[in-house]
Image 1 (cartoon, rainbow, N blue to C red):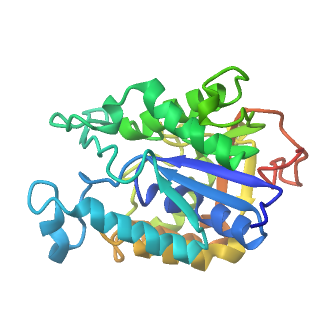
Image 2: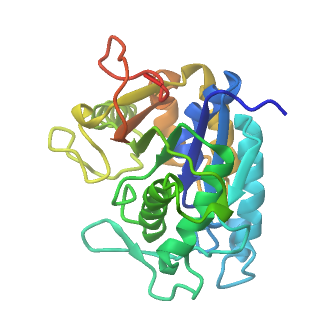
Length: 303
């Protein structure tokens, strides 16, 4: 099998996170013949179920949501064209940690998370599982969350920690050679939400009389904790031509994203011209050449 010259590795927490944040980027790179490998930490067993007829899948009822979301992920990856997608350590190694909301509006760990919750995982043990994947795939670029996991979910934060630590360990020449030949990742990006794009989308929704998925945010104030100003963004990938594939992937995650909910309303309001443009902060590596907007237009820019 021919190995693509350029290879992207993404570390995410649960099925659906990848399509929301990076669906257009993944579809674009697959179409261009670049390697795309997705690693998911757990199956999201304790996530919400937004489809009434599937509520019985929940962990406190039939407890079969994880297997169902595994199937949703497979369908989403078919929509994006991604053939290499894995669960860290294998399906079922780690469990969803659950989530509760802090009074300040961000997520925190569930009070009854299971013993094998991903957020409780030993950092080095979890990182070693990713080191092995890094040394196998040998990606030049890694994408994960920022240090707060976007909105505070404990599994997102742990995914950030595991990805950042594993990327360091993977490149150490003397570290656990049984995990593969050392490999140094050239560039690491953190997925970002552009405050300017989000603000424009919310304005369009309000003008159309739709409910925002982000609540009643002051559009003239500072960005909320889960968004960043454009000067913090290094790269923006234009996946406009892959908007329909991203939407199809989001629809595949039916238990997590309501088809008639505000999320899709925002996507329809913005259209491919905005919703399929995905933003990234550069955490490790050197920023490459930029386009007219001042952003890298390719995560492999400069490599």
